[in-house]
Amino acid sequence: MHILDAVFLMSNTKVEGCPDPIFKEVAFIGRSNVGKSSLINMLVNKKGLAKTSSTPGKTQTINHFEVKVKHGKNWYLVDLPGYGYAKKSKSSRKDWQSMIKHYLEERENLTCTFVLIDLRHEAQKIDIEFMERLLKDGIPMAIVFTKADKLKDQAAVKAFEQYESVLKSKWGDTPNLFISSAESQLGKDRLLQFISTIV
Ligand code: GTP
Ligand code: MG
Image (cartoon, rainbow, N blue to C red; front, side, top):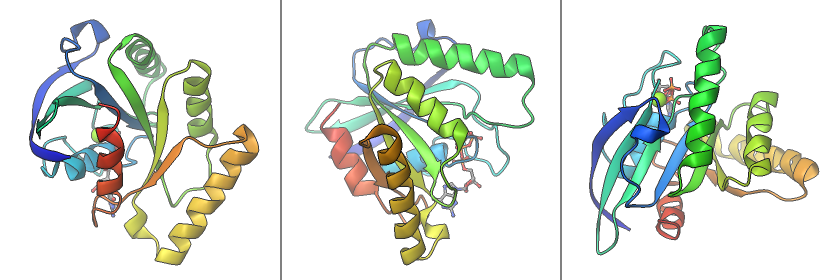
């Protein structure tokens, strides 16, 4: 896929306000600070497009970007706020849940939700539960392991295989799995290739 440009469209707290679903879209979600916004910038080759921060909880709204493609249909890319942010109050956690639930269930043009997981961490309950919710609700999903550059090659492969075996033992199978690094651009081509088949 040849991406010409990517532009920010709008931020929303309600699915009703999201752009008209004239293009297919893919969304990125996962724990706070896992690297969602960084991955998005890496994919579209535009540093600073999605706002990143070393402080968890940076992204708080549903953020739509339009990706402009040469010889093909444009698509929407969506940066979602993360979960598992310790400092969040109970009520803002509830607001997050309700916003995300409505978005995921009602966004008719959503063709894949990428759940991001830090490759350095073992399988965590919060991620597994979130993914099981998606599976149960029939929401198309894939997993992207992030920050692979923070591990040596061998350790990265080991961490990946370990996670894969946890999923296989739980689910019998795994969704599509990707390894990425926003630093080294690892995974970029494979992810874009996959996205080109669903948008
Ligand atoms: P929230 O919006 O707060 O939920 O965070 P996020 O998931 O969007 O994470 P963000 O992209 O803002 O990145 C969080 C921190 O991790 C930043 O300091 C990034 O520079 C760093 N980071 C993200 N991806 C990578 C990566 O692939 N490699 C390395 N080394 N650091 C990364
Ligand atoms: Mg973010």
